[in-house]
Structures are given as structure tokens and as C-alpha cells.
Image 1 (cartoon, rainbow, N blue to C red):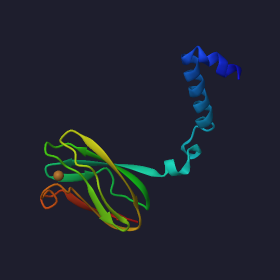
Image 2: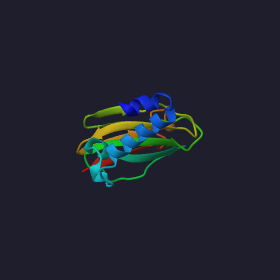
Image 3: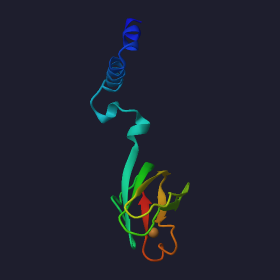
Image 4: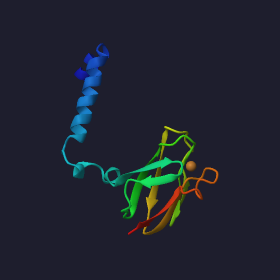
Length: 132
Ligand SMILES: [Cu+2]
């Protein structure tokens, strides 16, 4: 109670107390193993797109949740579609220099990834991945 009363007149102290509380809550351990399991199991993948190619930062996939960051390194607009077991998703389309994200849960099997803009897929903006 005394902390709440004191913080009323000192917003900065209140912010400091919240930060300290968060540090205590998260800071119980310093390793990734201490993080919530659902958070720790999301794997980031970078997809670099340009005219006309689509390059993944990894080709090794195991079942799990992935967050694809689509970096449009080209000048035309691009996006990402993913289709395979349990997934049929398309990111937003972003202009050159911009990026967007797409989160999907991959199972064992083969997935096709491609750019859904115009005929970019047939121009070479596609790849397949095998989740093992
Ligand atoms: Cu494209």
C-alpha cells in the first residue's frame, strides 16, 4: 500500500516499480529454458524476396510454429503464400524495401512457398520445403 501511495505523485517511480516487477518475474532464470514453452518454440525464418527469386534463411524444418519475416529486397510488390498439410496462408503484400510477417504451424510433409503477386510464381519466386 505504501508503494501505491508514494507512486501517485511520482509516475517515474511507478514505472520503475513495474519494470522491477517484470525483471523479477522474467529474471528467475537467465536461460532460454526458463522462458514459456510456447514462446520458445516459435522459430524465426527470414524470406528474402526480389525480382524474381525467393530465398529462405534455412531449409531445415522440423514440425513446429514458424514466424516467417518476408523482406522485400526488390522494387516491385511481393508477398508470401504457404500451402501444405494444414496450412493455406498468404501474407500481406508489401512494396519494395518493406517487410511483413506470417506465422504458420508446420507438420511433417512438403510445403510450397511462393509469391502470390501476378505471375511472380512462374517467374521463379517459388520454392518447396520438406518438414521432417
Ligand atoms: Cu512477387
